[in-house]
Image: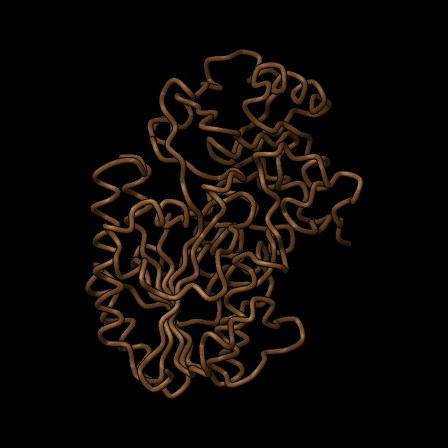
Length: 398
């Protein structure tokens, strides 16, 4: 059974946080249209083209989607001098929204399944495994729990392959065979790439391999640089320049009958050390807490039995207006995850804390390295949610 958001809670979010517009303009709406173009027709009634992307693809049967981790729309537009190629690409369908939380595992699975998080079940960077007394970090996930049980929905890649499209996902070798790869890209052949130049070469080869292809590429280093140096850093801007050069090389070798879509999984905000609070150092944030998951700007707090109400009150008391702190039920009813299947709800924390402004909740003992990061994401600010959709087509398509 699905829990659909309640109309009476439409105004529940603070004005600076945004509910992702599922079915109207999120990453869930992107891949079905790309796959349908490659297949030469729609993939079924549940996978339409709400974005009107088909016209922009001009009937391309070879379609490549390049996802740049961390390439937020707002950050890209702030630095056109470092990304002249990206800035010059067409943006015919405007900006899309990441899902909630605005983090890589959730976004990749949302795009790969064309479903909101409440339906596909990858509901955070790290979430509780109900009944197992442990936390699953989705970027470190291999085969426990079984990916096909944790995320059983058919992907767009599988639907495209069934329609005769050659499907391939290209990314770091570390992710080959991972649980997240299985959950998000199931149905596509996974090929490792080892550098920006190699990623370009493999994407070119994949597009040329058959008359009808859907090729997906993933690039991680811009996000890594943002986490470690911040998006307001020379390192991030220089890395953006490398991304721009990579896209230029992709365009130079784009087949005449192909289309390229460049997008991202989320944006990012810089958080100073003074804007962070340490949950490991504040007794009120530990009392009654069984475990804490999520990430610094999108926290899930799991309470010991019977303590959920007290934990909610304590977190609200300590954090105040620096985050939107609500119960699991309030978060679900607000619609931020889309409709949430009852069987998946327990993966969400008893308490949900989504950061506002440049705030974050770290845990310096339990999460030493994440607590040191500068660039963060996960919450529902425009800077974190807005992602670009940039399109180029080959010479034969006009």
